[in-house]
Each structure stands twice: as C-alpha cells, then as structure tokens.
Length: 355
Ligand SMILES: *Cc1c(COP(=O)(O)O)cnc(C)c1O
Image 1: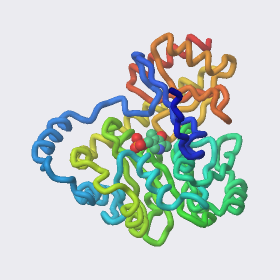
Image 2: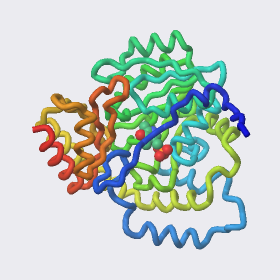
Image 3: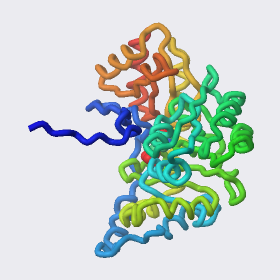
C-alpha cells in the first residue's frame, strides 16, 4: 500500500531545521555552555525545594516567585519580566505575538540563525540585511532594510553569535530610533559584555532584552530563559504562550540559581579573563581573530581550509563549531571558552595543525 504523506505548510516543509552536531569527544567547545556545573550546594538546595512541590497541582502559571527574583536582580517590576523554556521559547513567543503572516522581521547577517528560523516558522517574512565586512552593524544598511520592509520586529544580538561583537549603546539607541516596531536585543551572553541594553528598557520604549540561564548560569540542561521589556509587551506575550508552559521544577531551579548570583559573577569574570588569554594565543597563530565580548571566539585559519582544521581537531578529540560552510563565514570556526585545561588542549592542538 502506498501511503500519501501529508505535506506540512510550505513555510515549514521548505525548512532545513536547526542543527548543532554533537560528537563524542573529550573536549567539547562547540555550544557555548559554561564549562563548570552550578556551584556546590545548588543541587542539594534544589532537591529541598523539589521536595516541597505540590506535584498534584498545576504550577504557578504566572511564575510569580521567579519573576520577582528576576525583577529584583534587574531593578525592574515583575510585570516587566516574561519567563519561558529557554530564551528560544521567549523569542518564539515574541514572534508569535508580534510577527506572523503579513508582517516582517529584520535581521542583520551573520547573526544567530534562530532569529530568522523562528520568524519563518511563525509565518513572518524575513527582511535580511548585511553586516559590514568587519561584521559591525552598517547603519546605512539598517536604514535601507527598515525603510523597505517596515518590520514589526528588528533583531539585534549583543554580543552577536557567532561573531562575538558587542553593539554599542549608541548603535542600539540609533536602531531604536529607526525601527517602526519592537526591537529585540538577544543578550544570551550579556553578562560577558561590558554593558547591557537592559539599561534602556522602560515602559515607554519598544525594546525587549532576552537573557538565558543556559550560558552564564551554568544551567543549559534546564531550558530557562526570560525577557525584560515594557509591561504592556509582557501582558501580550502571556496571552499567546501556552498556559502552564513553565513547570514547577524549572521555576524552582531558576529561583535557587538566583541565590548563587555572586558565584555566577565570579565564574563570568574568570571566563572573561580566560577569553583574553585564548584570544591572545590565537592572535599569535596564523589566524584572523574577531574581538569577542562573549564566552566564545570566532577565528579563521589563514593557510588551511577551516573544514580541514575542524576535522583535525576532532581527531584530537576536540570539538569546536564548524562555521566554515556558513554564508559570510567561509573558513571560520568558533571556539567556546572552556576550563584552562580544555583551552590548552585546544590551543596546543590548533598550534600543531597550523604551524
Ligand atoms: C544559546 C543562545 C540562545 C539560546 O538560549 P536558550 O535559553 O538555551 O534557548 C539564544 N540566543 C543566542 C544568541 C544564543 O547563542
């Protein structure tokens, strides 16, 4: 019997899906996670909280405790916080609420692939702009894209993944002045950067800033992210997201994590210093290196093909992100900052490959 397969709608059927290949290696420096687990005490404190949950009841739908904790952290009100399953779900909810058929979203490539991907899934047209040759934002291009597309959503990513570049306060303010719709600044790596667009958020500005527990908080396994934005935006997002989308376990995990703010800041400071060391060694090798404000560094080996370098690193049981076939990033690799030992293994291996 032949089975007729039902076709998904075109915007889904034509899609590639999002891939981040995993291999079984000793040194994993490909997905920008924290190389360290949460601090000592976290697991036990969480177990105590989990023991107190009412498992037969739905979780607090408004996640009041966690939103209050995040509001205190950022000096805003809980009504200005929206929490979801990873900042990817935050971004998806924003696109479902403010994007959709007949609307468009502006992105400036190369940037985080999921901004355009999520836009397409939600039926939002993608208005694609190009960054300058050094991957900085080209304001003439921003003007062109915005005036042609009149986007409901304009995405920035600071520090930008995969380039590592931090947008300046002036740039974000200028984009805010030009954009007719909501400006979304994805700050998945915000704590590694010298400034945050959080300082521009208030109820009179159409700006939202997304952050995540996946990177700086050492909690990628939990899938927890949030945005800070005007309370009227948060109220709209709450209407669109599924009821009880954030389970009680995760709400508890987020609240316990916030007790370890000082440890998080220490870890971020250590990783930022280690990034400086890795950048410096990379610069001594025959590579182009882009300055980073995140926990990863983008580089391009000059004499050897990026794909070949990636394969030889894998042979040494070291996995970095292979961007060498991505448009605009020909020959580039992206390495996550790991522990000193992991970084040494990577740098030694790369040094042998390149010299
Ligand atoms: C890792 C990453 C995210 C994903 O965050 P989750 O909270 O794990 O969904 C979002 N944006 C950027 C730019 C990232 O690199």
